[in-house]
Amino acid sequence: MKKIIKYFSLIILLIFVSCKENSVVNPPSDNLDFFPAKAEAKYSFNFYYVLNPGLNGTKFISIGNLNNINGTEYFAETDSSIFERTITVDTTFFRKSKTGVFYFIDTTGVSEFIPDSIRNSLSIDTESRLLFFPLTINQTWPVYQVDVTFSGVPVYSIIKISAKVIDSYLLTKTFRNSSITKLVNKIQYDMDVQLSPTSPKETFTAFGYTMDGIGFIKWEGDTLVLDLIRGGRLNFTGTITSSTVVEELTNYFIP
Image (tube, rainbow, N blue to C red; front, side, top):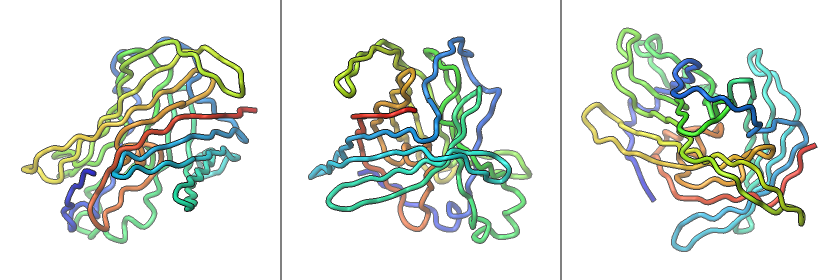
């Protein structure tokens, strides 16, 4: 398990998300739907934490109705994870547009920890960008970023996540005794963490596999990356930790 010792007085103060609409390399050209967003859709995954010993479990995802958050409508996503006789339920919120999929990042209460001397120098966004539509091989885009700024100008990035489509291929999968062959895009998410300008940079990596007409069929990699890009929160109350997880879709229903 990887650990990053935080700089308490600095890191707890800063959350900055950057989702630039115009900073995408190699604009895509296809029209396929790699993230169906429909209320009442359901997905089930088996997951495995690569620990010693490992942990096996099951995750159930259900998509609820639209919710209005600060004037923007988001689908509610409820994730119920079961392992070691423990049930964990998390709710996240996402929206889908013609240009991609965005997860809402709840920054409520963060300002309580930010001194007045620093507060005005921060730019805080409320979304991370999971996908850029439509997808194509070698496409890249910015996902999430935490910057230290001076007079409104970024000095360096504490956290910077970028994405790249590294493979695109046809895959045959069997669900409910029925086989389907669809196009899959494999996306690499790299998260660079540098807690101070003089500290070494550490990189965490995760991969997502998204299938046309279904959505994500597999996730693998560092939980620190996956939790954040899928609408989670960074925890600054102790050390920042990450373990390795593999999640694979076992069944789905899309109305």
